Amino acid sequence: MNTEIELCLNVISGQHDALIKQVSVLFSVASPPQEQELYGIYYDTPALDLAKRHMGLRLRKQDGGWMQTFKSGRPGAGGLHTRLECEHATQEQALELHRISHPSTRDFLTSKKIAPLLRPVFVTRIQRTHWQIPYKEDGLVELALDIGAVECNGRTLAVSEIEIELKSGPVDAVFAVAQALAQHFALLPQLRSKAERGYCLFTQATATPEEAHIPQLRPTLSPWQARQAVMLECLRHLQYNLAEIGHGDDMEFIHQARVAIRRMRSADKTFSRLPTDAHWRKIMKDLQKLGLMLGQVRDCDVLLHDSLAPAEQSLPSGRKAWCTIRNDLSSRREQYMQVLRTELASPRIGQMLLHVLQWLHLEPPPSGQDAGATLESFASRVLDRHVKAVRKLASNWEALDETQRHTLRKQIKKLRYAAEFFSSLYKASKVDKFLASLQSMQKTLGILNDAAVTRQILQDMATQLPQAAFACGVATGWHACASEQAIEKACQALKDIQQAKPFW
Image (cartoon, rainbow, N blue to C red; front, side):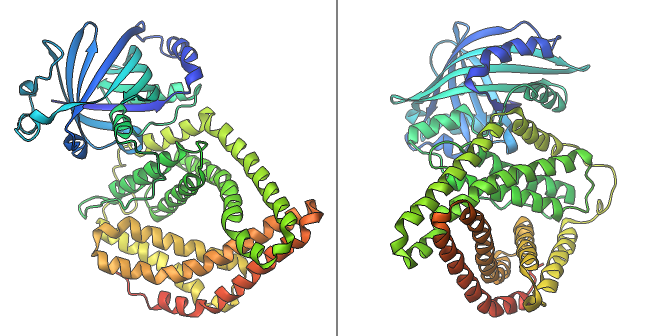
């Protein structure tokens, strides 16, 4: 059994020929391209016992013969997959489970509970073009362009991707090839393997927005390793949702992608005492720009689906004006979406995501600020700093202007995110109790922020659409009233924050 290290990137279907030509230009040392027709049959039990254990079992027909492959491992963070792999040629189109070299895997697959139940669940038909690319002295990468489909019970899912597999040498070789190609093509990391997509077809599962997960940290990790784990989870959160934007009803995917960027930028500040470089700081600025683009679409969505409804109910006679407002908002959203689609179809986003992934796989520096700190002591200092910033603003609540209240809202979010990042190090009940103390104030400040955004957009709209100016004023006034009510309820929420007992 060996370890497979592979990076998978989506390719826009119209770019195949150009990519094939560009490989010979970018990599003069590459071998001549070889073409293969690959037919894969994936096996599992009716209860999907292998999928539940993150295992994959496949027979593949290639070059006139059959190859059995077993893989094991969870999806790779950010699209860089590291899996255990065991494969060998078979005599015919039949599984040979007894030849699997890994003892515990062989025992599991040949057991009476599994082996008799194994059957085909889906197939893949792939036209592969691949190259061998040397890297420096001892590195070797296999680059493969796969075009085809995953098929299951009459349903199909197109495949258009490149796989960059490390054959020998450092993982930098994989990133070097990926970055060279990403300068010319829109290559977004593909988090789901062909097998995972096949299982989605089999179960007829549709794509749903991905929420943030809590990274599982251990006290023995260094702060540097903890930052890597937290950032990779934020990257996963972002990539899963970015991949679905522009496909059907994408409102919640946009929201979650925006949240992922906020969490990543918050994580950057949480670990700000650790060393970075100019390259990383540029990545953070690029992420901020993408977040602003997502935010423009999100603001329209909130107005269309949430903020306008209560104001419309208070002025039912203004139906024509409300239609005018909604049509204008829908038009604005589409304009913002077009800009976002253009950005996602450009090489820039793929390059940025690859830069994030590569940077997070750098070796830690030999020394630096907090390099020798335990993770728990590091977390305590970070959380103390965030709490101090929140309580300082909260203690002067009545004197805060709109900008300062927005700053308080951001500080509370940073505290919440930091608490979640480190939460696996502490007792869950204490963490949950602390986070609950922030919830009421977050809700209050969220109402105030929505009102401010609503006012800004509708005031601009009222000058451009005189026929809807009165309705814009009604909506602005309704949210101003809601803001006043929220402010009146803030006292208890502020008391909860001031009295919240730290869990660290």
